[in-house]
Length: 239
View 1 (spheres, rainbow, N blue to C red):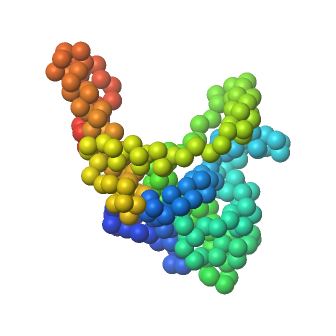
View 2 (cartoon, helix red, strand yellow):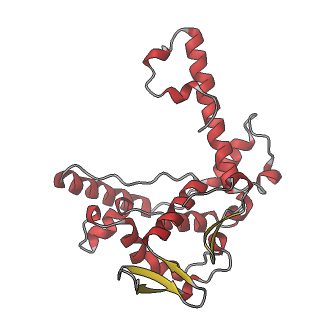
């Protein structure tokens, strides 16, 4: 999906004529941060991130597509409150079916005239990632031994983290940025920024700090620019 309108000026992105993705404000997300990040994490999940759960039901995560995983997780989506992302669109009305054109699995709402196929899901997931600055996790182990070792490590990690309470993410970023001289918003003002605007500000400040530190090293003679592989650190503009 090509996003033609600047996300800095947008409050939503149209995916289908009857389906849009909202770009919530920081304040809206802070009302229930855990719910929001659980929701977008599930909607953008890749089999690599669900390797343990897939292994538990006898599936090889390297053989499962993103769309197949989405269809497996859909029943839980249908019961979730997704208004913060999709407004008043009723996802509980969507049911699983098959495309009359090629027989591939789809989600269909005759009431709302919505059809979500693999391409549409990919567009939804990519849009959510872009809005929320999420990198896609699509790594694959080089061989079966590496795969089994990775699953074992991930299983231990999940068991360890299952006992930990949720750690606020966005709240900590807000506190950190509000107390940076480069960030021009106070606590009240930041509530009204869209999450895309906030994320872009965060990335720009990180880029500027990295650039400043690099230039200090260059001027001090401790950094040789000819040996820097990633030349992006030589620009203060985030791309």
